[in-house]
Amino acid sequence: MSAPLLAVSGLSRSFGKLVVLSELDLSVEPRGIHAIIGPNGAGKTTFFNLVTGALSADAGHIRFDGSEIGDLPAYRRTALGICRTFQNIRLFGSMSVLENVLLGLHCRSRGGLLSPLLGVPFRRTSAETSARQRAEEILELVGLTPRAYQPATELPYGEQRRLEIARALASAPKLLLLDEPSAGMNTQETLELEGLILQVNRRDVTILLIEHKMSLVMKLSKVVTVLNFGQKIAEGSPTAVQRDPRVIEAYLGSE
Amino acid sequence: MLSDHTVSILIFAGIDVIMALSFYLPASAGQLSAGQGGFMALGAYTAAYLTVQHRVPFPLALAAGGLVGGLVGLAVGFPALRLRGLYLVLVTFGFGEVVRVLFLNAPAFGGPGGFAGIPPATTIWHVLGLLIVLVYFFTRLNGSRMGRAFAALRDDEAAAEAMGVNSTYVKLAAFTAGGVIAGLGGALYAHYTLFIDPEAFGVGRSLFVMLYAVFGGLSSFWGAVVGATILSVLPELLRWVKDWREIFYGLLVLAMMLVRPQGLLDTTLLARLSLRGERAAARG
Image 1 (cartoon, rainbow over the protein chains, first blue to last red):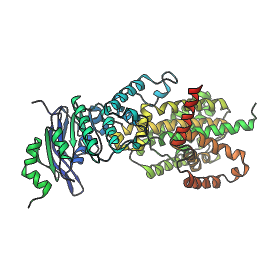
Image 2 (image 1 turned 45 degrees about the vertical axis):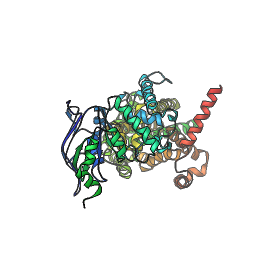
Image 3 (image 1 turned 180 degrees about the vertical axis):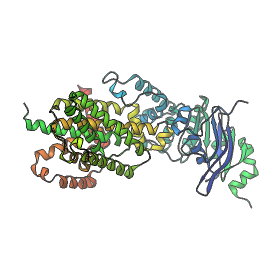
Image 4 (image 1 turned 90 degrees about the vertical axis):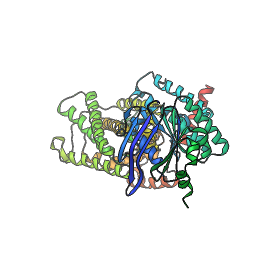
C-alpha cells in the first residue's frame, strides 16, 4: 500500500454554532478516483474548501504529498498540485475560453508586471507562446478547441462545466477536486463527462469527486466516503457502501 | 507649427490621460482608487522639490516622482488588501485628503501658498513619450500572465486564488504601478505649470481622474485614453463647458448611467473595431 496523496485528520469547521465538519479523518490514495457522497448539508463542499484553502479549519491537519498544508494560502496549495472546480460554475466572465485556461496556467508560467515592456516588440514572449500551446492542448483534450475565442460564459452549461475542468487541469494538479461536475447535465453530457474524468485519471491525476448521480459514482470510483452532518458514516467500495444500513438511513431516514 | 495654446491643451490632455491610466491599472484588478490625486501630488512635489532645491536634472526628478508615487502606492496597498468596493474607495479617498493636508501644513513645500519657481522642463515630447510607453505597456499587458491575473481578480477573487493567483501580490503590484504612473504624471504637471499648490491635487482631481476612465469605459485601457482626451479637450473647445465644468460633468455622469453605464468603449464596440482592423490588415 502506498502512502496516501491526501490525508486529513481531525478536521473540524463550524460556522457560528453550526458544526459543518467535525473531526473528519479521510485518506485519498494516489491515482484513484475517490467519491464523496452525502445528503445536502453534509459538509462535502466545506471539506473541499478546507482542502483547497478557501476556508481555514478550526482544528485538524491536512497533509498533501507528505507535507502539512493546513496553514498555506490557497494559491500555494494550487502550486503544490491541488486544484478544483466549483459546484456553482465560476468561470471568469470577462475572458474567452482560451484565456480561462491560460489563467489556470498562472502558477506554471512566468512573467511579472514589467515583462510586457521586455522582449521583442509586437512579438509574443516565449513564455506566452508556450503557455498558449499548453492551453490549446488542454482545450483539445476536453473538446473545446472550436470554442477557444468565445466568451466563456456564453458556452452552453455542459461545456462550461468542461471548461472548469480544463482550467483546473491547466494548473497541472496531482489531485483534482470536482464538485458535482455532472450537476445540471443531461444523460449524453454526463456520459461524455464520465469519459473525460476517466481520461484525466489515466494521466495520473488523482480525482476526488463530490457527486449526487449515483450511477456515475458507481461506475467511476473505487472508494466512496459517505458524509452526514459533518461526520463520516461509511467508507468502502461503492457496492459495500450502498448496502450499509447507516447510509440507507441517512438518505431515506429511519423509521 | 502648433500654437502655444494648442500645445498647452495637448499637454494637459496628455497628463489627464496618464492620470486616467493610473486609475485604470488598479481598477483592472478590481481595486477602485479615489486617491490618485494624492499620488499625483507626491510625484509633483517630489520632482519639483528636487529640481528647485537640489538642482537635480529633470529626468532624474521625474523618475524620483514616479518612485515616490510607487512606494506610497505600495504602502496604501497594504490596508487596501482587507478592503473591498466602497470601503476601498473611502480609504483611498481619505489617503488623498491626508496627502493634501500634509502639503498644506508643510512650510518646506510652500504650505497653502503653494510651491513656485519650478523650472520649465516638461515638453509635449515628454508627455507623448510617456504615453507611447504606457500604451505599449497596456497593449502587451492584455495578453500577458499578469494582465490575465488582474482580470481574474476583478471577475472573481476567490476563483482566481483557487486557480493559483496570489491575490495579495497582484493587488500590491497594481497599486504600486498605479502610484508610479500617477507620480510621473504629477512630476510632468509640476514642470509645466511651474507652480503647484495642494488644492490642485485634491478630491476634485481624484474624482475627475476616476470619471475620465469610467466615462471612457473600464473594459479596456483605451477607455481611459479616449475618455480623458474627450473630457479634457472638450472644455477648451466649448467655452460654456469650461465655465460649467463641474455641473456639465455631473450631468454627463447621470446621462451615462441612463444611456451607456458601461462607458463609451464597451467590449462589443472594441471587438467590432479590432475586427475591422484585422479585416483591413487581411486586405492590405
